[in-house]
Amino acid sequence: MAPSAMTRWTTSLSEAQPVPYWLDDPGKPHPEPALTGAETCDLLVVGGGYSGLWTALIAKERDPRREVVLLEGREVGWAASGRNGGFCAASLTHGLANGLTRWPDEIKKLKELGARNLDEIEAAVARYSLDCDFERSGEIDVATEPHQAAELREWHEELRERGLADGVEFLDADAVREQVDSPTFLAGLHDRRGVAMLHPAKLAWGLKRACLRLGVRVYEHTPALALKAYGAGMAVRTPYGSVRARKVALATNIFPNLVKRVRAYTVPVYDYALMTEPLTADQLASVGWKNRQGLGDSANQFHYFRLSADNRILWGGYDAIYPYGGRVRAEYDDRPETYAKLAGHFFTCFPQLEGVRFTHAWGGAIDTCSRFSAFFGTAHHGKVAYAAGYTGLGVGATRFGADVMLDLLAGERTERTELEMVRKKPLPFPPEPFAWTGIALTKWSLARADAHGGRRNLWLKTMDRLGLGFDS
View 1 (cartoon, helix red, strand yellow):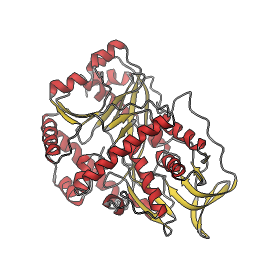
View 2: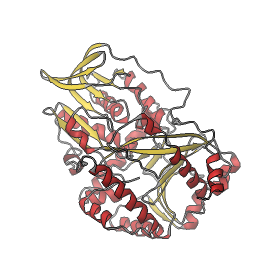
View 3: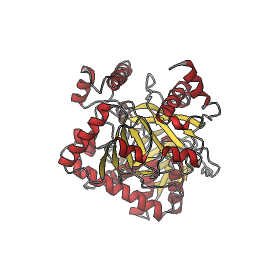
View 4: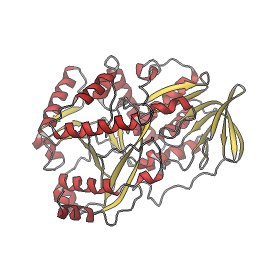
């Protein structure tokens, strides 16, 4: 990168606040009081992100008489649920390609369940008046290199042959640039119905309000410190009190699971994003983007980008940073060297927007597992259930995960619990230094593949055969 280009691009960051745009909202609700003293309930939900909120809400929908308590260590939606890109995908498997590789015999059922899950999210948005800027606008995967364009065409043809291409259209260079105009776009795969855009923090805050209206008792600034069996149920200790519950749903995702054996299945990967100032009418016209789809490029180290309700562009992805030792720390949420890199990539994609400023720059941890999609399980003789490992596609899939956890706690055999995806777990990550070394080698190999026509080296081919991977 030439020094003059670096100066031009980084100037756009001079006023960017190092806070998530979504959480920087004057309408942010006040937190509920912390738990002090002893509580009892039928179901205790630990975690106030999407996974926990959907679990509490659906539990009350299934049985309005059930006493449900939700504990959140800080404030509802402050972590991944309030700092993601706001892509709410139907896919439960981190995309059809990943699902087809891992569960080919179940992929049609998984696709059907994912589509139904997204429809149910849309219905809940209407039913509870969740003011979260929900737009069923779809998504386009774009090719920015010739080999990516060829791969998208081949993949679309494979989807057609397998009967999985419903609602998915291949776009050549002219067609994709008619939708969104970038000189880097060479082709696209347009999923018209399988993805919605939304304001992620407003979804979390709206789900909290819906839970409270249904009688869920929500305690914020109340971390769960320890879990143990207590009589016929379970007990959770908090800083100023405790909760006794018949059943417990653990929805802490990347934060240390209260069932210690689960911790080896996830690692934190830090992802970063920028948000521009609102585009003027002329700036928006120069880009097109009339249909407001979400976009993502097809590289291994990929970007995702979208319009907000007030016509800002969110631009995120590419760098996926794994901290040695797998620690989750607040200082990792801010990474200026990544922001500079992302700004350069943004203006390469949209040179017509030179002069646009970024107002917010932020990062956060993704709960990554080795198969890229959620895993599930129970502990303490079925009195505790957990779900984790959404790997960046949890905005939609967490609702499905909530249903799975409630099915498992009820001891029910359902179409969800019968899935191989639910019954089997991914491979755990090795201890350090092997985890860091393996992830670093995989990242280097993915970048090399991007630079060499998509050709995967021996390391990546071995990871593919083992069903392992690492995704930006």
